[in-house]
Each structure stands twice: as structure tokens, then as C-alpha cells.
Length: 360
Image (cartoon, rainbow, N blue to C red; front, side, top):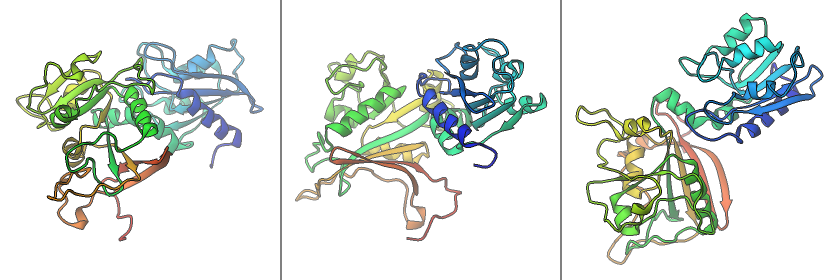
């Protein structure tokens, strides 16, 4: 990569790993590695949560004064340039005598951006955009909040190879196997809210909790959200969820309304940053149709269901507003993973303004 050394790239990959040690919350996960002039590692750090030192400062505090003079700081996110619960990281690096800073993703925050400019003004050599795709992927949910002002939305569904979400009689447990279900629950535990529709709630009676394979609850649980006008039964399993239930109609997902805030606005005000949608074909399709799906998880089982003798059909998705092939909603596949006998395809919508990626 132009402008960076092999050791700096290796240190950036290590910074990504370190970032994963920090909690996923309203602040981005960030990792940092300090390199001596000869390329050896001096210290490592990561952001451990709101109110704690940022990754760069976490690494700096492990060394004595003057130990990093002339060193290189490799950071997964551009050093911040504002004072909140902690001081500006850019200033901390300058005062420590760091000679060079290599970062991956730029900070888009109105208050926190500008760290690279401040470093350069102080005579520090700065290189941005190192492994940028990986750096952005690490904090894609936080970036969604910063750029769009709403939570990041993942839409998940499970389907047979022929695109069915349930058998003709409506039964759907279980299309996928234990490994895929365990992966879903792990991802639930990383979300702030989980969304289903009343149709799924009344037919499947889901608990909407994040559970380990042995049935125990993860320490971190998503807020249960049910969309639809039908009542939630008093004896529904979701009533036993450790977090309060949010029940509202599903008409206003993302648009503003004079009568009530949109679901996205309400969730953002509640501190929700990551939304996990797995509420069946109707709800999944509504989020995609509204342009609110930032990530799609399609769990595909090697099984065939077809339609019933009377034509009963339960597709994985319903209407997406596509009337002609030119309206199709293209996706960019980010990864394909085997989970037991099942496949998981992780994809992101291609913005409508993007050039066509082929005529096939």
C-alpha cells in the first residue's frame, strides 16, 4: 500500500484485532499500536468503553514519558480532535512526541473530526486510508449513525434452497441447523434491538433473547421490538424478556411524521445503534423496501419445500417494489460462510446511484 510499510500494515491488522476487545456501543471500537523507529512494537491499546481513555491514550499510558518520541502510532480510526469525557487524542500524540501516524478510517463526526489536520499542522507525518475497507467494515454500524443519523439495520432471514421461509402449513422451525441458529443468537447478542412483526410473534411465540447453545442467556440482550397493530398476548414469551418490550405499529419505519417519531428516530433516542430485524417476510421486506437495510444476512439451508397442493407459498421475502428487472435491488456480497450444512451470505445493498455491475 502506497505510503505505508509492511510493518505498519501488519500493525494495522493487529489494531483491528485489538479494537474487537472493546465493547460495541454508542462509541466506535478502536485499536492502536505504537511502533518504535525500528518497527518493533512499543505498546498496544484499545478503547474499553465510554469515559475510558481512547485507544491511542490507552497505549501511551503504558510507557514512560519520552518513550514514544519519534515513534509511529498505527490506529484503526483517525485520532479524534475534540474534548469530551476525555481529551483530544491528536493532542496527546503530539505532546508525546509521536513522529508519524497511520490510520485507516476517517472520523466523520462533526465535533471529533480534524485530528489528521491538527497532527499535520504540528509537523507530524500522517497517512490515512490504510486498509480502508477493513477499517470501515469494523465500525460500519457506528458510521451509519454518524452519516445517516439513524441506527444501523441488519435484516436476517432463513430460507430453503428454493426460497421458502416456511412450509405450506406455515411451520418454519427449523429450516436451518444448530450451527446457523447459534450464529444468529451470537449476532443477536451484539445488537441493541431485535425487531419482529406481530405475525411472527403470534405464530412462533419467540422469546427474542440471545441464547448460547446450552440455552443460557448471553450477558448482553437486545431490546425486544414488536411491530404491528395486533395485541401482544399477556402470556407471550417475549413478556418474560429481561428488557422492556417496545410495541408499536409498523407504518412509520424511517420517515418523519407530525404525529409521532419514526421507529428509527425513537430507537435512536433510546440509545439504539444496531437493529437486528428477523420478523418474517413482511417486516423484512418493509425494511428493504424503505431503504433501511444496511446489511443482509441470508441463511440458506440445503432443503426444498416448494408450494402446497393448493398453492400455499411462504416466500422468504414479499413485495420489494420491484416491477421490472431494471428495478431489481442489487447487493454486494461481502462474505459467504458454511455453518454446518447451511450457507450464510452476508451482503450490503448497492446504492441506486451506483453504476450497473453487469447485465447478467
